[in-house]
Image 1 (spheres, one colour):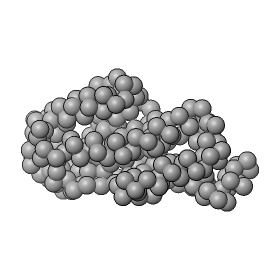
Image 2 (cartoon, one colour):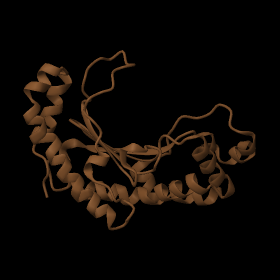
Image 3 (cartoon, rainbow, N blue to C red):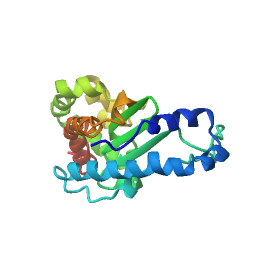
Length: 224
């Protein structure tokens, strides 16, 4: 099924050079027709197919869709709108971004596809590290799967210069324990947005991400 027209990409190309409230107000109906409404329909089908494998996804599109308006309160960049459209699909949706899930960023040129744990709190991070340190081979097996490696590559995230003492010995053989985030990402061309390839492509990436997302969900909750 095709959810979007070519105007999705055209809209964001134009927004890049016309990022103002005046321009957006003039194109608000177009935004609803070409961006927001078809994105909601896309999410209905995406969540429905994901829920067949993960019953915890008892959420609606509105629980996942992030606002196009930028939070400019503490930013030097005062342009009012994001030049991409984003959603975070997980059991908790956008209200809890520590939960591993599927983060999508649609722009005029690319679709960013991300998973993992981007914003763990102190206890969650400790539990993830405990799980990895107790059995590094299980973690390495998941991230070393050829399909995962080819789609997402390496684990990303900022690192602590000094990690807690209890993990320092394990970190010698598993340097990823220094991470304070455990996320991964990939990109596909935005040319698939107005095609029938969109939904199956996103689902393939999600299925590839599931083993590590499930590992992190369990680890951050229970640790070892």
